[in-house]
Length: 381
Image (tube, rainbow, N blue to C red; front, side, top):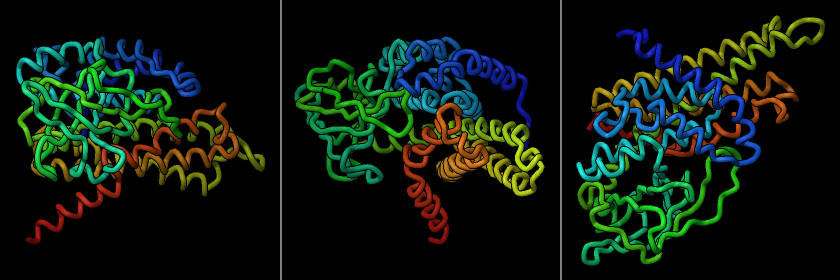
């Protein structure tokens, strides 16, 4: 058990940190205020290998580890959790194609995905099926060499900007065993994009519904076999949950650092706030909780990398702990800033708005607790 990063990881952190500080931090508030999706910035990130972090090198990926993956997103989210989270979702889609796609599919789609010539979206949630994803309603009916899709998807990050939509659809019976995975390319006849959602946070990435009306998709766009889609979806979510957990760590760490600096400089009753024991206790609790969450995320990343059978359990614990903790640390940082924390002149409120949704997406934290409890109780059977 070694808690020290190796030389390559330290160098990687330095490179990503420089990119974050120089390219993302100065623009993040502007992206948020004006709801700008920074595609050019994301392509610059791709030039550093950050659009295909765990993807094999033969198709342009960086082929790094899951620990490297969370280290990267923890740093990027210090500037903009919203933009970092989109890049995490894009990596999740690319990773799914790399793992489950045919060689032809890998060679066709992964090089442009790793360069961010293609942007991508992950499409599982539907208007009537959120946590109950196994009961999704979008159908894909075979017709000669195609599937005909009808239905809709909701809360799709990147909708309207993406080139590839990785969709879970029903090709067979009810339940998880009837779900398959299809890649739907933009401009496919029968695919349309709903209105851009107006959200509390995550302003730097668009979110909208997808609609399929007799949308014809080649059978060759299916990832894996028929009926394998739900297994593929859950596998992808392990990586997605790690990414979102890491983004919570990064955003919360930045808020903690801002709060630490603020209470040292701000004076009340002729003393710096940092001299008051109540403030010291709050800082100690924030940092301890944040460090515990970080260790949980790193442990989960190592378990996924090693294909540990307990990997999904560790991931569920890490996602729940890191996103709950991340939001609480942001909220505490805002409280320490007092009224100034509530103003948009200060960045804390932006992080608070961005991190709130992390407790909902990639599986709500209630579902994370269900996964944990089921795993624990299964040991008694």
